[in-house]
Length: 116
Image 1 (tube, helix red, strand yellow):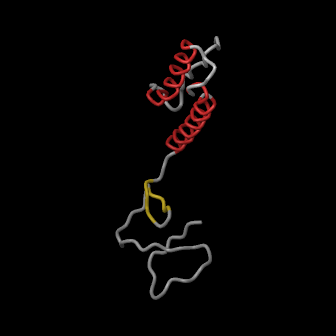
Image 2 (cartoon, rainbow, N blue to C red; image 1 turned 30 degrees about the horizontal axis):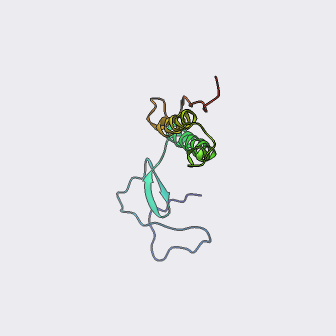
Image 3 (cartoon, rainbow, N blue to C red; image 1 turned 90 degrees about the vertical axis):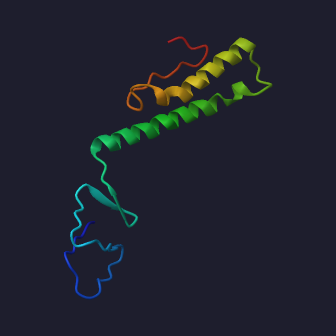
């Protein structure tokens, strides 16, 4: 809930769950939002979508890296070629943030042994 009080003479009322922030008389809050008592730029819908997509992509990437950690263990039952293929796959996962469409368009690498 947002309240705007133009001016106050005396003390501000005490309201549960409501906090007040003092601003300069010429303050213009357009494009700003109050977060934890600080004014920060308001995000537009495209920025929100971009940040949500990035969180989802990074979560998926993290899970895929965790699921393939075993391939890099010294005693993993893999031939040298297989280990190299997994190293390449894991590096491709790390490099997705460098892709031109990131985070809205990702060309996910295939796990070694998967064809298409």
